[in-house]
Amino acid sequence: MLPIYLSLIDTQEDRDKFEELYYKYRDLMYYVAFGILRDTYLAEDAVQAAFMRIINNLGKLDTENCHKTKAFVVIVVENVAKSMYSKRKKQSAVSFDELQYEVSDDANDLDNIINKLDVAEIVSKIKLLPETDRNILTLKYVYDMGNKEIADILNIKGAAMRKRLERARQRLSTLLRENGGYDY
Image (cartoon, rainbow, N blue to C red):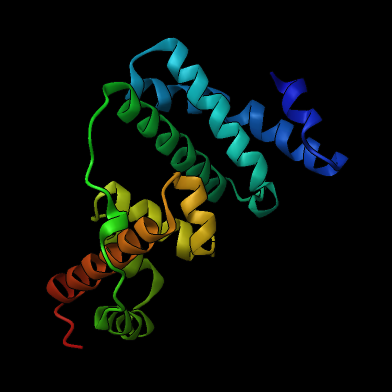
């Protein structure tokens, strides 16, 4: 599969970067996908689809900063595998597209809280959040991605992404207030 992926990449520098990522994370990606799907062939398909998404975001990845790259790769493959799992089980889910996006005062409150806390404290609180909240906040604030990019990676519509981000920010704000005793 590697030659096919490499043929999709324009520059030699990006090919080298992707090849390094491929060999470094393919087993981890398979392990994560198999843990969700419990099927060898579907897990392989999920890894392939995840690599295609990674190719589209290759410019944002830094192979030297392993923990951020590893987190990004795991988030991508998890979301691909979960999407496949949902389709496979034909579960009907509530669509977020019907929900209206409203700007929340909690977003401004969260910014005020974040400005007064240190990074380690915020990261420790983010780790307490549910996985979907952690993923979206990581992509938004650690990788500094735009809403459209996040929606593409998570394979969801823009309105759903904005709603998830709003809810994640509200939960983080609540958690920072409750556990830290912050009165903002």
